[in-house]
Length: 285
Image (cartoon, rainbow, N blue to C red):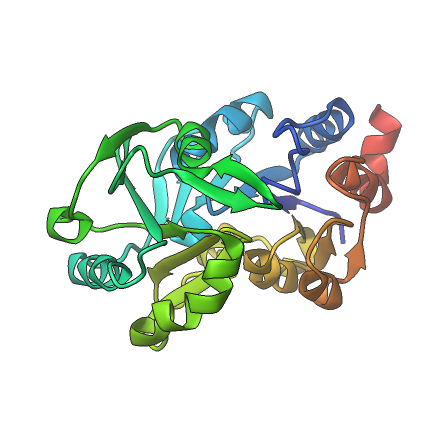
């Protein structure tokens, strides 16, 4: 069955380590769109952090979709219509943010409209791979947010949140994540989305649920889908799609469940796999 839906995580999958789409991968995706396939960006990022990539790939002209916040929100790139939205309730958001106060090295981040809210805009450095890393700048710039400092986020929140993102040194998160999620393990989705990210979304939210909720009514079949990922939070969509592909740079747990492993995000792994499964685009190059 021909591929009609191409689903991709962003960081570590679609983009290289400089956070850009390489020319070969971009060309393959544009040709796939011309041949009738739709593109879906499925990321932990907020919608605002995906729009520039969507425009670069002309997804606004080919009915592309954005699966943002790890699956809690889906947007039609062309119409900007919200097709799916399942946020944390206000009470759930407040409870998580209140609980995070018990972990002195954990920095919560939440967003609304054009702002990202944090406790302290100057407390933004973690240690990653032995080097200092300005994680709050990285996240706010990646999401196109202005930064705003709020001393008590739990008291501040009076609106639903699509997710609560927390960050710390990877070693600290590994040591404390079970205690962080303990009050919510049966009521919310709690997961690592990177070495230095642990986040909370509404119960049962993941990328596969968002995809199935939107794509099934559109008439797409799983056998017509190919999904690419590199992280733990990509597992649901890699298992969901007819062809689930792990990048060479993916975590081993994802490689273990994928149908196949392609080249890394630095070596046009998406393009290589699409040439294999969509020979019509190779001939169009």
